[in-house]
Image (tube, rainbow, N blue to C red; front, side, top):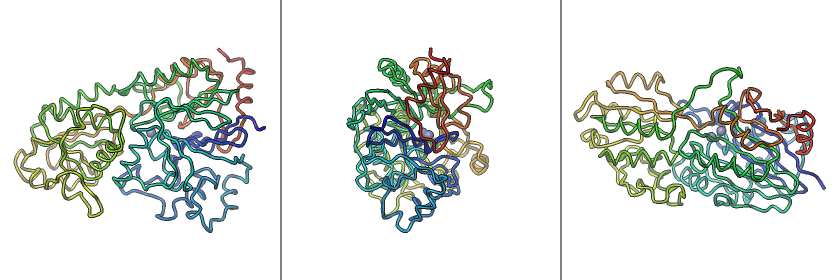
Length: 472
Ligand SMILES: [Zn+2]
Ligand SMILES: [Zn+2]
């Protein structure tokens, strides 16, 4: 019987796009299903400014012919790859032979494009596992038009639940990242234990979740850890800046809302629903009402309707929300009351506006109509369009608005990664989702550096670890 092995299809030496296939016997599990940030096609959700995307209806063909997703055709919707020259797809991967498994399943760690972009093109009824709150967020994203739906069979799993595939088990462990519901997994095949965490951070709202992951992995004596290394610099001795904690960030936000005399524009990621909830609640605490752009409102409403465990009992759930009427399209079924730009302009000091960059032109009306000119504030909070974006700067200058950047990112500091490695003390560690994986300090733990397209048995990685004599 075939022993446990790993094949690396993506995320090797690149930021994002982690696609690793673990297989044993006749069963395989692919974890994460995204497209790298630096791929030929910058996935369209990554930037809202002049987005470049795959050609509608031909996305999957372009992902496959561009070598951006695993060439395992049993993962995909056959309708989407009709008349695809599969020999060309093989050639893209240098005609390599890849392991094939009778049964393939998928785990998706979180709802960022570099981890889930291919999900809408999955084979109908393909078994896809994800953490409960990731699933709720995905339903919100589909309702808000931020992702196409999928015909795959998604199973939303509770935190710490275990899925038994027969040859191996997979335990889902919730992490902390700026996409709600982000989770890692622990694979146990009876011989080896492998831990995988996609994107994570220790400076976020829930450091205790990261500490719990470390503790669980250590208790279960994980042999191999696979982690992200997004923030690693080319020069391993370079100083990597510290990020503020989520609590510091929220305190900064609360102060701006308290002090602002005009409208507060807030540009944040609607995939970080916990930050969204906290910012809604803090706006209310400071006497402000909430107004949203329509797709933000749909994500918020539908994810919560599905049930977000992380927000159970959160005060933001009762908040009344108004939606800018001009952002509602005819295909949307909007559960909230709308408000016009004219009405909002008259009541600038009463609202926080959850804003979307392409709606910059709203400022022309909001900042010339009503009173309180030159008193509004604009907050950029971990969004892809930064405060120094020339088009944004132009608006802030024209209308005399004050700009603020409140960001702490979703990724672990290299020292936090080193702490995780030392805390788990695996026999070997693999750093993916990084342009400079060799810059990671592993505190004496053997680092294995796979190549894109490589298949390697878990036992041979661990044997080289023992050989290297680097076991702690
Ligand atoms: Zn990522
Ligand atoms: Zn992410």
